[in-house]
Length: 180
Image 1 (tube, rainbow, N blue to C red):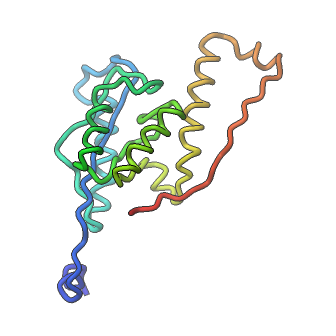
Image 2: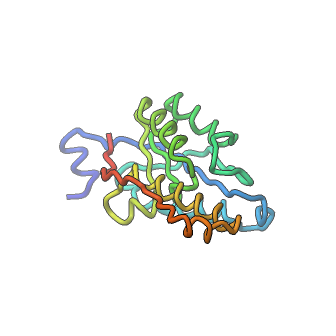
């Protein structure tokens, strides 16, 4: 029996899930290219949403692209528009290529998730979702850790941190992505 036949027989219709794709690139380098990182991120998000079409997922027309914006803070025009759309309940799900595109700060990520939760908006990081279970709260920890390691390396302070026997501790909280 086809899905459409089941819907007709049971009187149940699948809910359309309006999906917004958020993309970000830290620098403006390469953004002038015909196909750039933002385009690649958007394409991956669109492909994922198309793979979920039978579940009612649809891409919304609005673009939320922050080119040349750091993920270390929330001062990004497209992110602000996206959160406003979430608060207006114009989207049901936010899709990002990787969680560090949304935020590299654990505090900011928690703020974003709070806004999404208050407005019943789901969040999907494509590679994490495709891998199966999602440890949603651990992903920004890894993004923050990577950001910290990059800063330390770029300042040539890695050897100093190692000499001081600096230990980075990250608490990983396991959870699963639950659709409402």
